[in-house]
Length: 181
Image 1 (cartoon, rainbow, N blue to C red):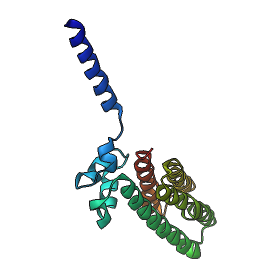
Image 2: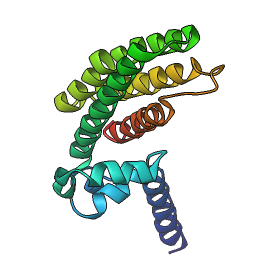
Image 3: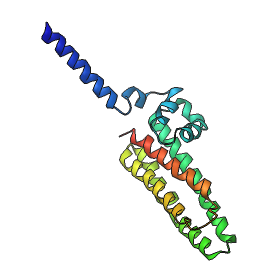
Image 4: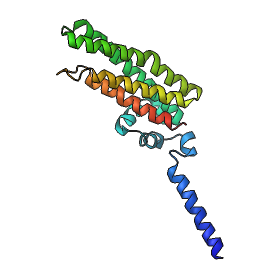
């Protein structure tokens, strides 16, 4: 009798340990519903940004985690493309050589984000290969971070807000896609 109880308690403890270390349950991964956005965003580094970005898209109400990852990559692409346009416009009017150099570097970083990093993430999510999706989104975050470092000696960082959103949204997308692994 004691062995049966001990075995049952050990089994329960083992099952509880497995559940507590599972990043997202199979039900959450394949389910949909009103809580999906909040549940998923709790597993990202920027909860408020995640919720506002995902809920602003009507597809999120019926999306599973893969669908939310797709929405996130779409939002990231739009924001990065807008930031690249902002950089290009600033380059046309910038007079200060240091500012121009920092903006040119950012233009290169954002070209990489828009032409390479985000398409890799989108394709990986679409084809069900999340490892490359995580890498693409992480690369986009690193490129945005590198852009920001180029302004460390500039008193005015004209794209600070846009660059921060691209960085943070990239981290959110990487975290969501990570849940698919």
